[in-house]
Length: 327
Image (cartoon, rainbow, N blue to C red; front, side, top):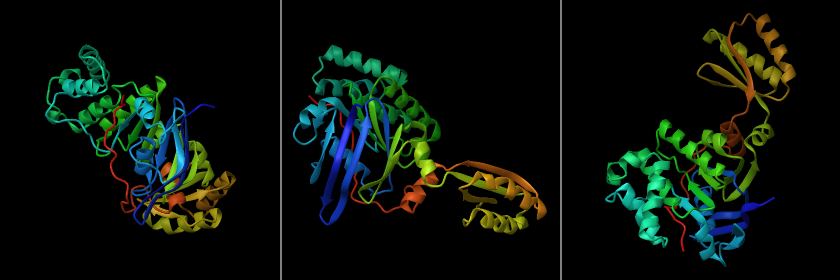
């Protein structure tokens, strides 16, 4: 199997704070690796090490077979990076931003202009190409920012929480762009706190907490690993919630939760489902909703880390900014 990204035992300290405590990662060529973790878990620090912006204190990492410490210039020729916040020049137009990046990468003016036009069309920005970036909406700026990271035809793209602050429509648009990139053979490492985003895009997922990878696998593998399926029961009347909780607790052996009138509990053995239905009927409980589903990534994350995504206090991770491929 060919890995575009390989990291072994990465460690990094900032003073007394241990940001990375032995991170191991691999990403298959042409795939999306989703890296999940709360604020301060080490996601951005990992990206900065892999993108040659930080030197690790220990461990090693390779991108497309090149060591990020001993061969950083070659790595930079092969990668692009889009950070948490758009890093375009707001006073320049969309076209001027991309031409500037192309020229910095050593493209001749004509080639830089052709590449800019190609990317503006690809990201549906042609109509706004001659407008200053400061007039762009948030979603348009993020698309321009992503376009800038692709000027140099990177083989590996690091996306550090690229949809932070975007509305659902803009987020969905960026998801489509990421899917097209992998169709073209680009390897994407995506850090995110949006669990739905990882579920939609990632071929593989690594969960980082306190500077370590604490779990990895495909989305379905992780969902299966932490409890299989989830039972949800919504009684027709609110007073019946107490009865439903009691019956569910007795038959699942778990402590149910209640949210918006929905009683929820993990269910290890689906064969218990008919027994639950019978007991509810015997108790005279009318049910408005009854379902059995796979665990969500939100539930996986909560089970693995002990807290929801984004709930931890910010640590030493800092926004990575935008890095274009270098010559």
